[in-house]
Image (cartoon, rainbow, N blue to C red):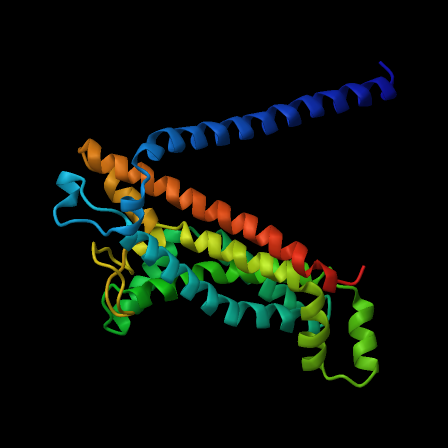
Length: 286
């Protein structure tokens, strides 16, 4: 067999494997989507979205999931704001103030890569340790801090990857015209990379709103609506976890409905991210 024929066979075999894997991924996604929609859609109504659970609802299945929806939104928005407040300046610092192949920049990127791979339950344990140290109770604030730690490496590395794609000439031209590094970072580099940075922020938001393990020990859970940073708060992932774990069909129905709502929220975030990215793409130099 000639080398050319061998390469053709290898290429065809690789294409078959690639198509098979892609088809398997799509099939798994469709099965999960169909399961959640079929089991969750019958319980989706206005009352479910606008009412909080009734007392004893785990045994009776009464009330709605408004407490979990608001709790997830408050927690994810607060954590994303806190993580972005730290992560975006760090990404700009790496790409503007440090040299391209700086050892310090490499160390920072490696550290965030390691943090990205840590399971979320470890972040929950870390947040629990912080709570004990500061004598805090389970609360919305503790959940926000924990989820911010979870989102920080994701958001920073995503923004860093986008910033590395900005042409180096823009930085050099800006500095040569007398602009400071701070002005270059926020008026030139940030503006060019803004669509990608916005996507990175929304990726972090989607990751934070869908996590359960990190808030299990820190945010707590309550049937009440969130009214204070220092009180426990319900979230959709934990609502799904607790409700599906009960032996009552009515409560399990609410769990599947909660899963459907969470899926729709994440889908909305993804679509919103694409719309905003196209909207601000006009500011990017091509």
